View 1 (tube, helix red, strand yellow):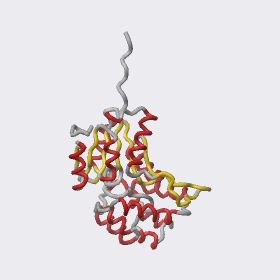
View 2 (cartoon, one colour):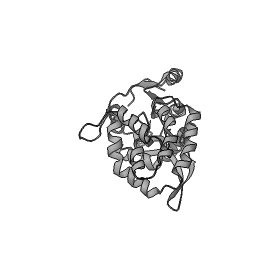
View 3 (cartoon, one colour):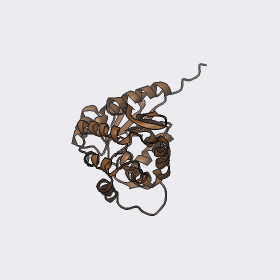
Length: 267
């Protein structure tokens, strides 16, 4: 009797900023980068307006591109080892309190159902990977920076934004054997429409009007995440809004990139 062919593998692809965490992954590390001497006050202020637009959901593609370009100037000459050290030492302090409880539960459900979880973010790999590790994700698709002699040159060699996210998902699916028609994707941003359209089960998270309209056209589901919650037990943190505004007013900014078909049950 012929052996039964195993079912194709599937995956759940999650945008990071404002989908899994309630803020920008890059902005979450603004203060430790500033304290570590990597970002100057003037460099931080140059990106303040763009960061504010991102956090209130108003940043469009032109503004995001401008933010990406200003990033090249800010990060040029940063020592890669120092960036990784700061992120590793502060990831729990700055990321744990702003993770959506609903996202954590959804990640666990997908993994319990045998799906790999993949974080897909326009933020750079050196920031995204430690966060993905904390979340227990299986893989990462993220932007890549050029490095020479242990320092960032300021060049962005791969920008995981818009259609590039979908291309990264297709590439990973080909390598790992994922059936994208059986896979899931989640995002809060209209710029991630290609990402949601690349799978059989796309879901918006806390969608604005434009994304809700796109969801109706494409048949995507709509989810609402409301509860940032610490991943580890500990004393309560100050409110997220206060923290975001304080960082925006004092140091602000991006230190690395911000963007960083089914109404069935998402898992």
